[in-house]
Image 1 (cartoon, rainbow, N blue to C red):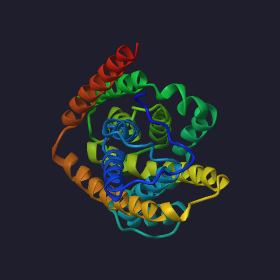
Image 2: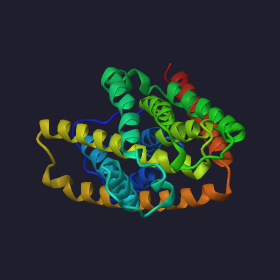
Image 3: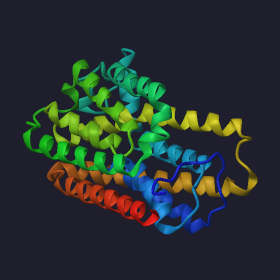
Image 4: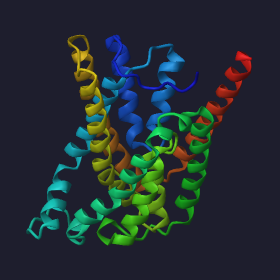
Amino acid sequence: MLWVRYDDFLPIMSILQVIILAVVQGLTEFLPISSSAHLALAPWLLGWEDPGLAFDIALHLGTLASVLVYFFKDWMQIIAQGFGLSYSNDAELAKNRSLLWMLAVASLPIGLFGFLFNKQAESTWRSPYIIGTMLILVGLLMAVADRVGKQRRDIGEIGFFDSIVIGISQALAIVPGTSRSGITITTGLFRNLNRESAARFSFLLSTPAIAAAAAKSFYDLMKHGGLTPEVRVQFFIGMVVSAIVGCLVIGFFLKYLKTNTLKFFVYYRIVFGIIVIALASFFRHSAV
């Protein structure tokens, strides 16, 4: 079975396994290459057990910490301006005093889609063929957006319509292989945002979504008795490592986009998608 589902409990893993999976999460959550696809493949390719629900929560909390720490000053300014307070740390954000409410409105679609299609997202949509197809399709869409987008607007010029369109596109990220950052950055480019602003808005928009996912998973874990003493160390290490790597990746990616296109990530997605589909076909035929 190519796709690995999260079970209700966290198996005992070595510290090396925990660190590798946390690094994978930190790298792929913010790069436009789909963290869900990579976390599905890594244990399968390495012959490891399913990491489990508790480890999923640790990784979500780690990446949530990444965006909160990296964008702490941004969030302080966004929240203050949203409530009419005078607080200015960033000139671009200062131009957009309604950004808090735009982010709130843009977060609604993924909440609705998650509620309506949660069962499909956790079962039938986890097919390697769907994952591979979405990797390729979104990669091609990203290539078009990177080429045709005029990239003349910054985050201070984002309006409510932009937020709604990008928020709707984020809802597609519940389909594995799509990539939350990939589809929202692509949509931002189609709305003529420059690459850095499209990524910055994408990361800010990811904060409520990641927080909601972590809260939902934590609730599910509590229903099954919470963390056992045996896995608390693994939980903490996974959370810290994914948080540190996530912060580094955010900083690197935003700097990278100032002077580079998304071409590398387009090629990566397409090649990776082809490999996923090829592996799925190979093992399907081998099992017959």
